[in-house]
Length: 366
Ligand SMILES: *Cc1c(COP(=O)(O)O)cnc(C)c1O
Image (cartoon, rainbow, N blue to C red; front, side, top):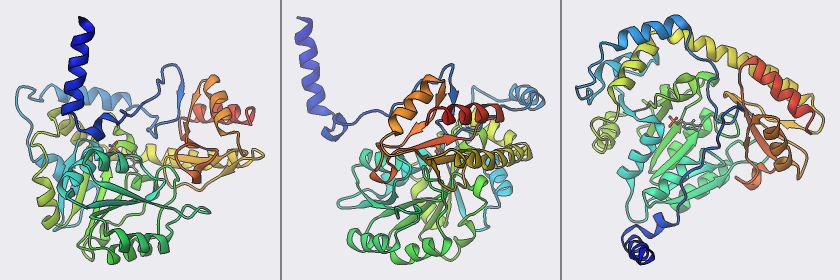
């Protein structure tokens, strides 16, 4: 009897849930309890005690019974100030840049509309294109230095006429930045939007923000996640009001809750604290890269982010990843993500003691 009910429910599911959705799998986050967690590109540093105290104190004034300001007016003003958003450009906020990618896709979807990106890159671009029912075109990066393969990109843009092109610069998981000249060429070659994802701008110092005036089809997307507020979920999108106001029509009015608005604004008043943490991570990145480079048989790739990608001996990626896990160190294994990333692993820069533990474990595992 029970089985019959289940069967009937399944029939309904099969009938009603979109067929493409039925074949999807929710993304899996490995459990990190008790591990040295260097897999998720997080800032390893907690807030200093004085900041935490002041934050808790001030949070008592937050009106939890009221709806949030749908325009996040005060927070936007703070963001404009701290990140030098050009005058005349519009700003839109998302529950993480995840949500911004989702809203862009919803705004652009339509028969035959495609999304293009240089791959391997942030998996969410492809995933969210699928959610929106848009075809995703991945153009492989140059396999030597993971730079843009400009001939292939231009040909793909010509062939597919993408509605949106995503360029993460610096790119995840490769860690490198694309040249502004090449991004400019792509902007000039497409009739679609180009979203430059600058999630790691704090670590690279490079930005297309100053190019917004010259390119009407450019949007710059950033996130506060990598600077140290991953738990807060706040991303922002900057571009011409002509574009942003259209895309903003699809944003749910209360997508940025009162705690996020309050906390992000509070944190940005102390941006220097986060800048110091970013500087520390940049310094430690040099040490980690040098230490990996000294290990025989391991190739390390240049990074302008808070992580480093490296390649171990052919065929040994999975085994070394498993050994490190046994030793309590969690990395991201990239080997199955792309043919370009065979035997590649990605390590996030942690606290100095975590970095030392990682280097020691890797040295004895290769
Ligand atoms: C981490 C990351 C993001 C950030 O996403 P959030 O949803 O804001 O946490 C976006 N793009 C890239 C390339 C990333 O690596």
